[in-house]
Length: 128
Image 1: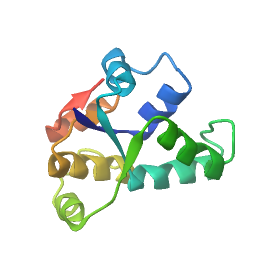
Image 2: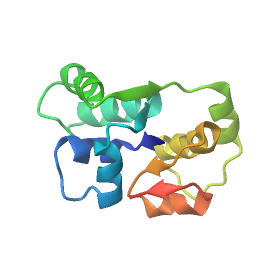
Image 3: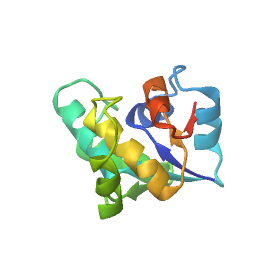
Image 4: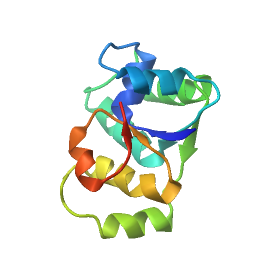
């Protein structure tokens, strides 16, 4: 199975945080799954690290890339098809990072590993 990982899901997986949903945890632990992390989520991670809102205990340039490699999570580029979908999204959710993920999910035909129930308004498959 392929799946797109939301920023908080990656953070909670790496930190072994109990807030990570059981189905999301199983999906991330299963070595046969192809996990994706959006470049948009990398941007969000960098912004929030810079603001001191999140941390993996090391500087950004030593933490995020290491965790993605270690956990065999591939980067998902932002393509024209994602931006075309983003331009037509309803405004159920205002967070630009989450809206990008919502646009990427159908284009990539993957579920989203996210706790954010507000994303259900878009009809995307969400695993938690």
